Amino acid sequence: KTSRYARKQYGDTFLKEYYWKPLFWSDSYFATTVSENSLQMVQEYIKNQ
Image (tube, rainbow, N blue to C red):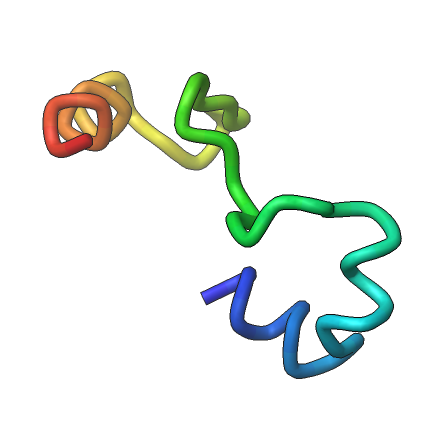
């Protein structure tokens, strides 16, 4: 959802200055705060990648 919002809000032309690949997210790592996520939620997310 966030990628779509950023592309809609700022447009691909603006984002291409910072993200030169067609992908917005990296497939090599996952980072998040854990304050709103339980360990089980994080493990489930990783499992479904």
